[in-house]
Length: 186
Image 1 (cartoon, one colour):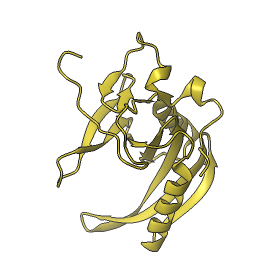
Image 2 (spheres, one colour):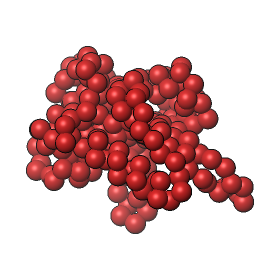
Image 3 (tube, one colour):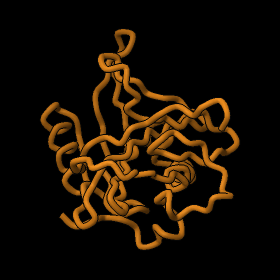
Image 4 (cartoon, helix red, strand yellow):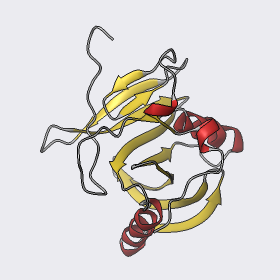
């Protein structure tokens, strides 16, 4: 599959770690580098079974951007295949998932039925993705105003500020890149 990335990725991100300067401040989470910004809370999402960090959630004004980076090849992209697989799974579970054009290119707009505290409601989310050099970065936007243009752009700009460190370890395409917590001396 072809790589899907915005034409301005090199200028606006998301970036490969080789594309950012050494003087640019980033918090180092292993495969993900997060640009510190006012008002953002960063949380590590841990898989209960493996105790492994599987994603980072960046929270801003009651909204959340969850990011994950995956290994990819130099020539093939993962976003189109991933987007179609997520859409198929959600639609099979009676959710609604549709592919639409967003500011980064194709994105997935999702509605799922959720029950919390005995009450049933619709949860909306937007999946974004960019195929970079030897990596794929997926983002999930959630919150009450993700379809408001100013909120959407804030979250997309936060996503675009992320830098991916693919590393040199040979990994199969689609393998989650390791996320670690910053050490005390960073």
